[in-house]
Length: 426
Image 1 (cartoon, helix red, strand yellow):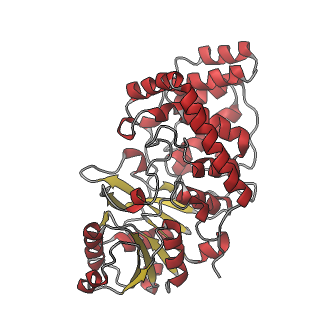
Image 2: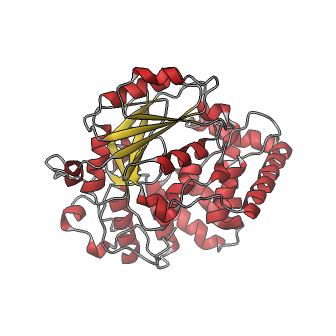
Image 3: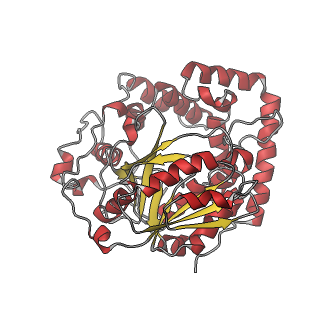
């Protein structure tokens, strides 16, 4: 998707610095030089190149063989076959498509071989932003998780960067105001009767006194340098958003997230951004209340406005994944997996998001790709054999699945008719 300015995030191969090109692999097996350049641009972004001054604003058509060559390098063979199938059923030239697919069967997926681009100046960088000591307002919504909240507030007591306030929006029942007396923090507690996550965050942002907003959660654990590392990232990359990384307790940061890169997602449980960002793009859309993808939609607005958002692995946090409280008590935890047979699939907010930004046609194709795989429970979402089984179960349960999808489509349509509920920050 192009930004509002008409630009993409992909740097033109001709402007890539020599030091970056040395870390990329020129693929001379492409038929066209244009495809070769696009491949280099893609590599640069995937390996963490940040700071392109000139990016593509349009893409030329390349030979069918080069298209299949590229997707085979980036995706599992099953998805390559899915692309072939979809292009055949949408009346693309079957001979050219099959030839392109067959002629590239020797190409192997190479995403696991990527080497992150190094930023050697990071270690010795002295941040002027940190030296200026701006006030950071930390926003934490909470609902019935005092035990977990205690842990993260104790982590904030140990922060190296001292110039921050914490705004906790407490929706718990029963409310325990005495709980907060035990912490040595610049802490403000905002009591909210309504159980509403996006309202909670919006309220805290409006009440925040800081020039920067740090978004956290009530069931994470952070390191003592969490705030300072977010600040340093904003300064080092001249970014508007530092998007931190989550990893499950007892595990390590995923390999594909363990390096600086242009952020591909925005998570409201681990991020820092300038408060002025909300003045430019608005607060969180309350159409996502008690549903999913509100943070992703906000991140897309930031991207479309051309603001730089950097994935920051050094500002990581442990996702404790509390089994109670939080969003689980407000609505659905999973965007595609329903708890009841005749509940809408996916959650209507997901279709509201897709239809708003990509249109109805693209949303329908997205359903074909995502819904069949969602039949299997959440714990099997990375288990390929179980996902294949899910596709077959979708066929057996087709009448039920179709009903769920139509129900979701209708509810999403009501959201679209009402329009976004995005308040501007004054």
